[in-house]
Image 1 (cartoon, rainbow over the protein chains, first blue to last red):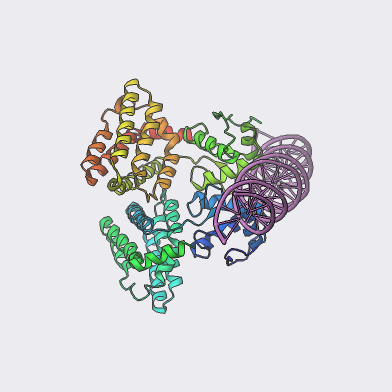
Image 2: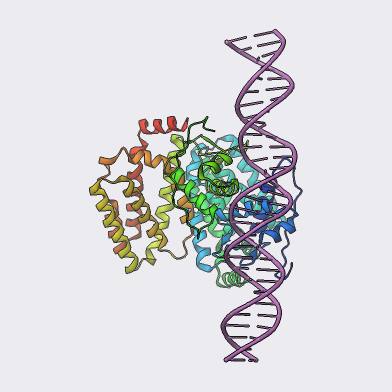
Length: 235
Length: 235
DNA sequence: TTGCTACTTTTGTGATCACAATCAACCACC
DNA sequence: GGTGGTTGATTGTGATCACAAAAGTAGCAA
């Protein structure tokens, strides 16, 4: 069963209020996002079903859903795997993030009221705390929450699912990157974003978001890290 | 069985080389895109399976896949339906199209060689022909092909799936709109786009794409049409 | 007529099974 | 020893079944 590289998936408690398919979906999604599944590693339904201790059926549905979100790739031989990364693709994903997220931030700005502003402030201070403690795991999660909260202020939001798809595709490689830039992430662009929000300055907000994204992944764009992406992707 | 409004889905020949799930997926996707399924209409797996004359299993998978692409909406009571449209949401979708597609066009520009340029020219002339014949069905399809061909020139393309998701969400309402603006769609922005491509002028290309999208849906933004969207959506 | 309750039906979920396509190991043959 | 074909195991696909939750319906009471 473990002829190929073994898969270590962190299992969470299964809530009975949630369908098995949803639980499997979330579990696999996290495994992809946290880079627990090597890109290029072929996944089989029955193997995952065995690991997660469920029947193959929920796994099938979860895999198909993740494939539809571009988190997984269905090869012609109808095998499923985490897509391999290339330097160019990584760059395209980052630029796409910037284009869509800066747009989403500007579109959300008019809807931000004091309640949401306070929520953002709260997240911002939590990020500062995590930064002091050097908890990069937490920083990454809180940073996502910050962005999500910002875009979600728009009640007619339609781009968030697209953005989440991009996050999912970048996920495993972002983590690889952020673990190495610990000391580089100095400037807190969120403060700039907060200031722009308070001034209702859409352009400044877009600049802050763009800078935040670009700096968060800039060091992942160095040749040696990009090379390591490809090596990891090559299985 | 037909207590609710009946569903008329155009059935295509099923190719044996293709899995049933894929066929069901394409069939349902077209049905959504062409507005054959009324927004708000609750869909049941068994009903669709009966219409398509397949077992419930492929329908389940196809529905889940379409839901992951935001073509369908899974309600809390785990019922599935085509999402209802609102004026604000329609506007958000259009602006998202402009943001992403203009970005995608600029990103594709450097990769367009003479072969792809000729392909685009061919599509452009086909659109002109269809326009002379007043075949709006064909115009709509060819227009999509034109955009898709343009963005796909980028070999590291990552935004096309996101764009297709937006098209899918706008699909049924776009058709409602384009049927009414027959005489309005006069200026062929594709010629401008072609000129920008030949000059390798990214900014001009973005402007042309933006104008093409905005004009194609501008008349759908009139209050009365938006009202009709909501009425149709209200089932 | 209106509101609630109990019952019946329908529906989504998930497990199991059958089958054809695919993959992997193996062996014969050049 | 390397190569091509063959057999056995594995896999995805799709059908069928069982079950609990949800929706719909009928009946009764106010």
